[in-house]
Image (cartoon, rainbow, N blue to C red; front, side, top):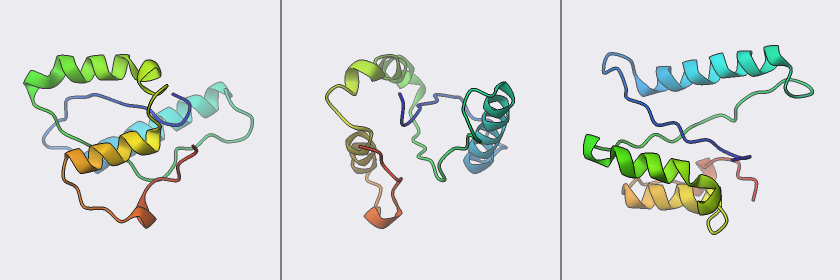
Length: 102
């Protein structure tokens, strides 16, 4: 998708989610900038969302991510993200959400 990505990974319990996301963003930004795929400097937006799923949900999550393009013909990233926050019963303040590009 043009405005977000979904990454489905198994986490090492000895490495925090924030460190994992930091390293993913850092290394992918370096890679993209070294390849000069964009004019100027590429950088990720601050922040991220992390949601956990059980092993029994792997196929469902995989298929959800696989069908992102089709899914987003009906739902924006903003709608999707807020739906996840509500589904996982996460309290949030709209002032601190992503900078959405609807």
